[in-house]
Image 1 (cartoon, rainbow, N blue to C red):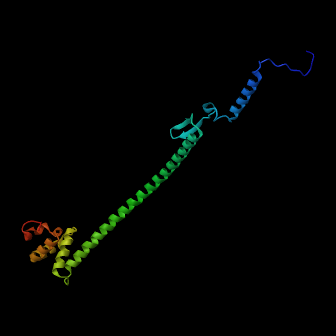
Image 2: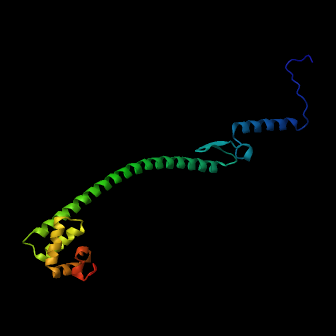
Image 3: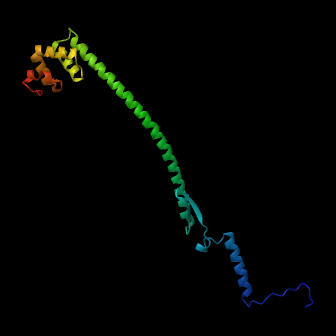
Length: 189
């Protein structure tokens, strides 16, 4: 007992010390993360995946499955951002389309008025053949023209029943209810 520098270790049997050294090395490797794959579930770490519904823990996944899940989450985020921007674009485009619809309706109304004016002018032009004048007058009535011009067209058709029948037969949409007696009592010719 009087010797300095000598340490006595407890007796662990013939295999005690080597087993203890191996256990210490394995514990060090596990803590360092070097035995994650060889030891299977013991060494796996838990990953967290953020979703719109909260965080989800990806337990018991190997590296490739976790990587795929993370890529899918990134893709979902990118698609969500893109769909949000597309929704904004669709809203802007629908507003433009409604503005264009309004403009188109205005243009159609202007064109209808111009066509009515053209048909009315053609009906009252003396150097145009009477057949064409009757067609123009009947077209004017079909477009919604009325009042004095309508009365003049009906008077002209009554004065020339053969030309009216010809016009109504060649284009049945031009037949006028007020002139049904000229076509045998019916509008259909």
